[in-house]
Amino acid sequence: MGMKSLNVISWHYQTPERRALKRNRLGPPDVYPQDAKQEEDNLGADRLKKGYQVAVTSYEHESIVYNVKMPRLDRLDDTMLRGAQLVMQIMAKKMELNANLDKERKRAGSAITKENIGSGGNGVG
Image (cartoon, rainbow, N blue to C red; front, side, top):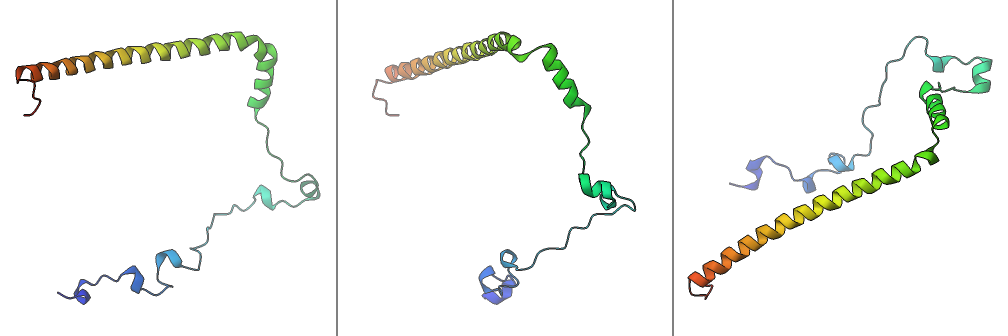
């Protein structure tokens, strides 16, 4: 079977215009549906003077009130205590997992040494 019967054209044999990675033109333009009376289309004197105004959400003002009622510096000690407790929990869990891993390694190691002693200690199977 010759190379021509495969019907697969190598990337190297294609012309530069047909190569997918070397196309010089952009894809189709992005088209978004337009509403009849969009806010952006209003070009009145007030709009031109002030520009586009972003609506302010109520959450911004609520966070200011919350931080004034309970200042962050008053919560600093509590936050540090909770952070220290979290670190201690992580360290305790890590120690527990390392202890379990050491037990498993010792068991596996003692089983290997018992097998070596039982087979004459040459270690060759």
